[in-house]
Amino acid sequence: MRYLAFFKSHLELIIFGVMMTTLSSFGQTFLLSLYVPFLMDEFSISNSEISSFYGIATIVSATILPKLGKYIDVIPLKKYTAYTTVIFLCSLFYMSVNTVWWGLPIAFFGLRLAGQGLYTHISITSMSRYFTLNRGKAISLASLGHPLGQAVFPALILILITQIGWRESLWVNAGITAVIIFGFLAFVLKDKHLVTEESNEKEETTTPSSNVTLRQRDILKTRAFWILAPNMFFLSFTITGLFFFQFSIVEFKGWDPALIAGGLTVYALASSGSILLAGPLIDQHSAKTFFPYYLYPFLFALLLILFSSRGWVIFPYMILLGISGGFGSATVAALQVEFFGQKQIGAVRSVFTSLMVLSSAAGPAAFGLILDLGLSYVGVFIFSILLAVFVIIQSMRVIPSYRLAKWKYHILKKKG
Image 1: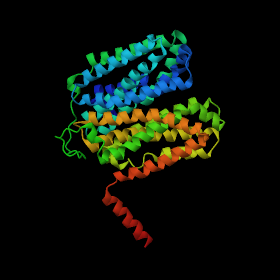
Image 2: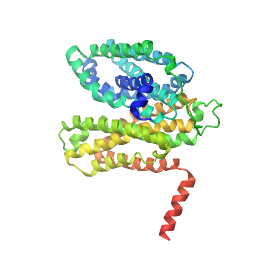
Image 3: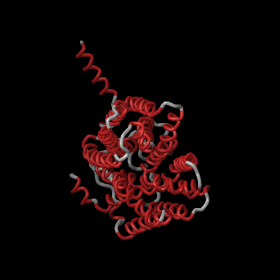
Image 4: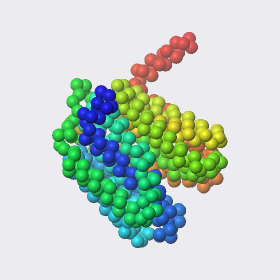
C-alpha cells in the first residue's frame, strides 16, 4: 500500500501520530533553548546554573518516564493522552507565572516529561500497536512531526516572544496545545479508529510468550535490549550534543554563523526524506535488515567535519546526520515491536524513551567535559567517531548467526 492510499485509509490515527510528535516540540531542547537568554536575565542566573537545572530535570524525568509510560498498555489511549496533556499544560502555565529560580527545574521537569517524553511515546506507541503490515509507514509518517516542529515553531516562537513577551508566549503555546489535543480527542478520534490492522502473518518476537506479563526490569535483561540500547543512546546523545554546541562548532571551524540556518533546513529535509523512505522498506524487508547499516551516514558526517574546514561542508554534514537520524528513528521504533511484540509495547517503549531522554541530557554534559579538559572540538569529533564505530560493530549482532557463517564461508572461499 502506497503512502497516499495508506494515509487516506487511516487518516484520523495517522494525523493523531503526527500531531503528538509535532506538539512535543514545546518540550524539546531546540525550542526550550530559545527561552534560555530570557530566563537567565529574568532570574539573574548563569549558563552553568541554568544548564544544571535543565540537566537535572531531564534526568529525573527520564527515571520517572518508565513508571508512567507503561500505563499506556492499560489506560485507553484517549484518556492517557488527556492526562498527559494536563501535565503538559500545567507545566507551561507554571513556567509562565514562576518568579523564583528554584521553580525552573520544576517547570523543566514537567515540560521534558510530558513533551519530549510522553508525547513522543504516545505517538510512536500507538503507531506500533495499531499497525502490523504497514507499521513502518505508520511510524515514518508519525515521526515527520519532529522535523515539522523544527521547521515551523522556532521562527513563530521568536516572533511571539518579540511581540508579546516570553511569559505570554507560553500561554499561547498552552492554548495551541489545549485546543488541538482536546478538540481532536473530542470530535475527530473515535474508538472505531483505534482498531489493530489485520495481518495474515504471525508475528515473531524474542519475548518468552505473548501471554507472559513482561516487567520492565525483565526488559533490561534481554539480549534484544542490549542490541537496541547502544544505538538509541548514541543517536540522541550525539545529535543533542552536536546541536547544543552548534554555534561554538561553527566558530571553531571558522565558518559564517549564518550557515547554521541553512544547515538546519537541509537537516530537516534530509530527515523527513529518509523517514519516508524507511517506512516502505521496513514493511517490505523488516527493520532488522537495515539496523546494522543506518549509522554509516552519521559516521561519514563526523569524518567530514573532522577533516574539512570548508564552509560548504556544513550542508553534506547536516544531510548525512539527517539521513541517519530519520532512518534510525523509524528503524529502531519498528525493531522494538519485532523484538518484543505489540501486546506490551507501551512498557517496552517507555523504557527506551526514557533512555533516549537520559542520553539527550548526557550528550551536552559529556561534550562539555571533553572541552573543559582542553581537547577542543577535535576531541569531541574523535570521541564521537570512536563511539559510532563501536555501536555499528555491536549492531551486527542483530544479523542471524547462520547468515554471518554464510558470509564468512564465501569470504574464505574467495581467498582460497
